Image 1 (cartoon, one colour):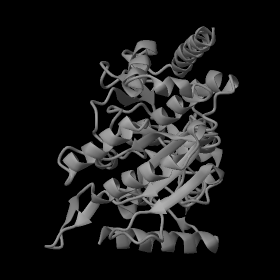
Image 2 (cartoon, helix red, strand yellow):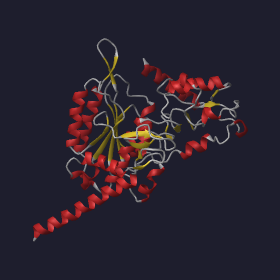
Image 3 (cartoon, helix red, strand yellow):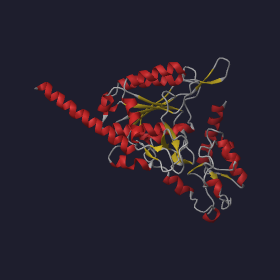
Image 4 (tube, one colour):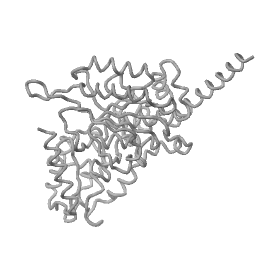
Length: 390
């Protein structure tokens, strides 16, 4: 089974890393074959020694403009393009590298979501706001988010509790990573729950069975939290309308929103965002672009992972973090009727023109608009209290 293969590869890679030996890649074909060797869901150029390669004539492979800015991995392999690497790679000497290609500098520069700088400078870092993520098993010891985890739970399923998966670190890092997240001080409530189940005939089928159990747990936990530290967002980087139990999941989503939580993703409401690369025009100019391409995130075995292409999976935790910053000190906003939809409308209204076409999210505009509404609500509340006292 695929999950057993992933567990084996995880154990193998950790063993190799522990004893300091890296696989030496001696040809370009071997380098291009690495994504295939690691499988479609853990694709990486990671913990390998490329020092014997001459990459100086392979600019397009590593840094050239992409013909398709949303290229699937299979297409990248066919076109001899490397899309991602980690910080644990031995690269050739500079004279054997393409002009302008410094993989370590690229990886480091792509950690921080620079569009959040003004928001964070205002002291808005999501402090006190709860973000729940339902996703794959998480590598919990990564320093990017380890101290932000307030609750971790593996929902019983056919996936063993022990082990980690690539996707968990990506989504957690986008939301609450110290240097990679949009809300580095938000509280993380993380639930590992499979997106599939094994049916009676032994087939793996997309299913929300375990996701529903995670949602129920979130509702239970939220009842125990003080009003100022409630879970306000659930980031769901999964889901299609064809999943088993989709109607039942929708009912739980609705219950969450009635209880003051916003669902982001999960194929719940029409998606208003699209992943973009700030260097290229938006694939869907009718939606608000979230800059998740060309992004560095925590790697699921420690260290960091850079990918030239992002995806929708990154947009949901990114957005949860932006909204958490907007609610910091402004939780009175959550007393508004249908505040979740209003927050989405604010995101659309404040979006700015992308220089390459379409719209791009404006975190500063979102925070300022929500803060303005919250201050007005507080003033009106005080006036009402004074009037009642008189």
